[in-house]
Image (tube, rainbow, N blue to C red; front, side):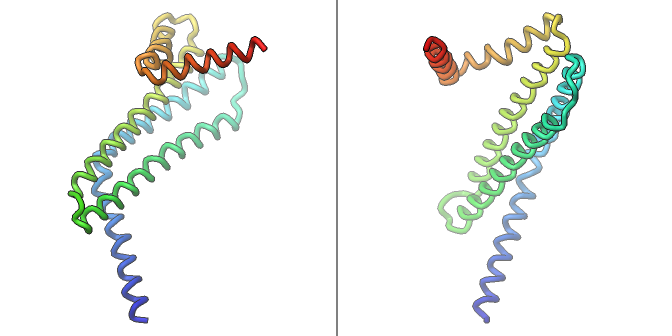
Length: 174
């Protein structure tokens, strides 16, 4: 029974350390998550406006997809944070590496995840605004730059889309 008590206390101590690590790591990421949340809400509202402009009914299925996407983003952020805190704790307890280095890596990964997720949402907003105001040249240019030109600046993405187009052309010829 005494062994079970010691194991239980050790588990509680590890959980408390993970919770404290999450609390200490979340402050720098909080601003990125606030900006991401605002952009996600803007995507939702611009999507509703674009659908109304096109005469489409506002259906609950696309709305659920928006919330699912948001939950997936948050799940990835939280999962990354928990993994980073666990790795930081392991590094601190085993003296294998500096725990601050692991936290720094965690914050960099979270920052890049927030940047990519925000880019996806801004792209969606620009698409919705382009649908809502199809005659606006500036929105067309912004949408073109965000959707086409940025992908062309990343070599692997450019090759992927070229290969995908080639495969589509081959399938259409059959």
